[in-house]
Length: 288
Image (tube, rainbow, N blue to C red):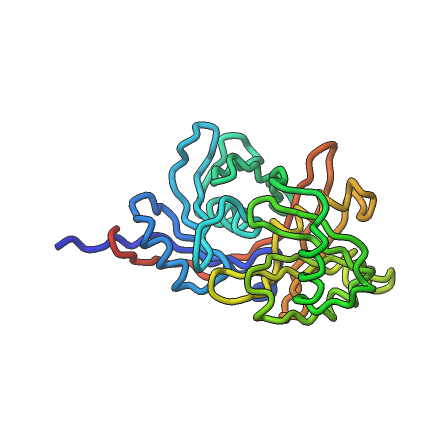
C-alpha cells in the first residue's frame, strides 16, 4: 500500500500587511496529481472562503496554473486567491519568466500579476455589465437591509463570481447594511460608498466595500474581495464616480482592516494588496 505524499502548504493573509487583519487563503503546492474530488473535499474542510491548488502550467506563457475552490465549487477567477497564490509561489522560490511580472493561468485565462511595492493583478474583463433589472434590484435592497434612499446606482459587475454592484451615498450606509441571511442565500452583492474627507484621511481609504454571497450552503460576508473591488472599479471609474487611483477598505464589520489598492492605467485597472505568510508546512491528501 503506497503512502500518500506530503505536499507543501502555505496559509496567507491577503490585502493586509499585518497578519489576521485581511482575508485568509489556503494554498496547496505541487497538486498536479490530486483528483478533483479531493481538491473539493480539502477546500470544504479548510472552511475558508477560497483554497487554491498550484499546478504546472498548460499554457507555455504562464508561470504556474491555479485552481480556485470555495467550500462548494470551483471558480474561474477570484482576486484574493490570485494575489495570495502569487505571494505563496514567489515565497517558495518561484521565478517568473518575465522579471517583475508573474503570469497566472486559471479558469479565466492568463492573469498578469505585477511585483513591486505590493502585488497587483490586472482586472479581467467583465463577463456581464449594465443595468440591474428593477425586480432584482428591489429584491437586493430588501434582502441586504438597505435604506432605498441611500442607493445611488446599481450595475452588473460580473467578472466570474457573478457580482451585482450597489453604490450607496456613503460609507456609513454601507456599514449600516443589515442583510437577511435567508433572503440573501442566492445573491452575490457588493456594496460601495465613499468616506467623508476627514475619515478618508484618518483611515487611508476613499471608500468602504462589503461583499455578500452564498457559497452553496449558507450566506456569508467575505472579509476582503479582490474580484469585487476589480469589478466595482471597472464600473465606477469610467463613470467618474471613483478616481483613477484610490484605496478601498473592506472587512470593518468583521473586525478586519483590509485595504485594496486600485489604479487605472490607460485601459487597464490594476488591483493590488499586501500579503503576509502566516502558516507554512505540509498537507497529506488522499490519492497523492
